[in-house]
Image (cartoon, rainbow, N blue to C red; front, side, top):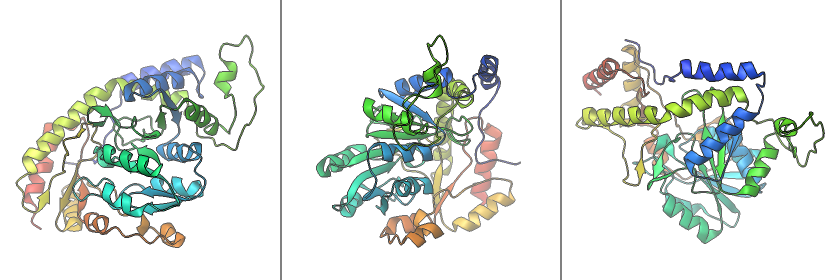
Length: 372
């Protein structure tokens, strides 16, 4: 068998939504983007949602929108490089706080140790869909008067104490990249309860203009060409092609999350008694929204090669990002011993909502036959 690591659930629903966009002939940012933003904000429980091209773009303009143009931003090392890149795009320096060994999320105790007079914000990455301990992080942020940005790239649909992640910090940044819990091919979203911040984000995503093309056209007897570039911005806007796919995916999301929850429980049951393998920890405050199923294994690289030889794709998503050449050139000198240990053991197993029982059982059988 050939088992992929991910497989998006796409079909006639997405094609139907795309057909409506093509028929309208408005494929840029327009009414479908606005509809998707409205529904997503309601889902997360925030006043505003701003559609963009990626979570990287979301992080970039969220940091800029909060006025951070220098100083330090605390981030975890076990995350995608984009988390730190967005900090550097804004002229600030990423400072790495260690992660928790069990959840792989940023450790509140180490955040406290890394705060200096230069610290402006904390980025909390809900790693693999496991929520960070937001109560502790928000308490630290209030104490030191810091912004909190939630990196929810891994965590669309994740709950923290019954409330959606992306609704706790000053901004929440989501990914709809091809492999995520829901996809628009590529795409992202910023959620916030700050109306002024949301309005600035809408400027920043479209060249810094006060009125984007749709807002100049909407409700007008004729198209208005007048606009003003209020500040330096970017070309980060979502378009109606992406939003149409997103609206169809959004309707499927509850089912996809339920399927992944079932699959996670099945993995937990089948793999819990293997001496050389550690299943993912689930703290009582977090629920659903899992993007990855990350186990920790002895002889990780040997395990990956073994699984590949059996036609099963696995992955290591999160080597500490300061290992990469560019971060070394910047001169980052982290002290994160837990991250250094766990990354050598973590591996993601195939995990997607349409995974069949036959595929699942094959993966489990092959794991049980491995000898480290």
